[in-house]
Image (cartoon, rainbow, N blue to C red; front, top):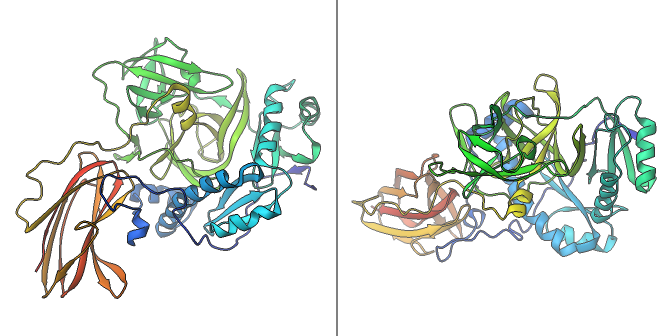
Length: 497
């Protein structure tokens, strides 16, 4: 395969066919309500947190409407990518999105696998090397540490160019070539990237909330888990104590990895949310991996809330303390003091800040330890927004009809019991929804026209409770409850004309 030996920056994907076809491949939401399904199946496009849309507008220069469309597309593309990776097996060569055209590309090392990709609604790109081969060569580089680490600061698998990209500082060309030869990586599968970056760990930091280690060094809570929180491994060794919240490092790994988890002392309550530094918080709904090219946002105490794009997954970076592999590489800016903070795509947790280079004035490169690896390493459960506490029995009282159920985050259900109600005269609909505390449940009123349903009224605030009225005509209606974030029980009250 012919490749450019040197390159200045990652190339963007050319626009292609829009992602169409089955949009819920491998991503059906689980829920307790009989008949519950994905919002898309009920004609509901999930709303996008306005704060996230504003940050993407500010940092990526896109409109809030485009931001909403992009985040919705990314969530659907992640499910398709996961299903195709399992189906394609050894021929899978990675996946990435073109955020400007909302296209999902999937690399395949076998022309015969392209049809399966197209059938799933993605665009196939036939390449020479499989993802497993590229990751194997990256692992070889991990084992062959460069003679001068400051000259070759990072390397990563770039699925877009189907190569292992090695970043080289000025004067480090010979060191990079020697590293590749020592690792036994085929020259045709390597791209070089000139860089000025000099990665460093961010010790004095806060993400969602600050915590302090030992006699005063500060780091951030990455994401809450049952019994404590996860953070960067370079923040503290196993056994180190913390304050605000108080706890103990129950596990820590750095270098090689850059993850840790802190077991919090009693009286500290994990909350499934990330500080957005504008007086509000983003609810954490899960930890589905976003694709390369996806838009993400980071939270940190020095520079606050900033957004950017995933450039690669599984990247390796060499700090002065040693090489860390398996990281998410992004162009989200960060500065010293932001380490350990949260990286999130929409409402899906992605990783915790490891380190990087640059700043939030001129831009930079930041690396994140994937959160799912931390959860797996220590057998932890991510804390998500809301809870399972049923609403009070007095919620939404005074309505002619009442419906109850339970939903998992991201699922939706039509009431009554997946069916509909027939209204024989014009008048006012009064609707009320009471969801679990801390969650964000939404309510939609839909009217049938022929074989399709259209939303005619809705309550979509960031609260767990919704109430609205609608002046309608005779016809067939249904009520759709959506668990936008958080899980638990709800009560729906309805009065029709």
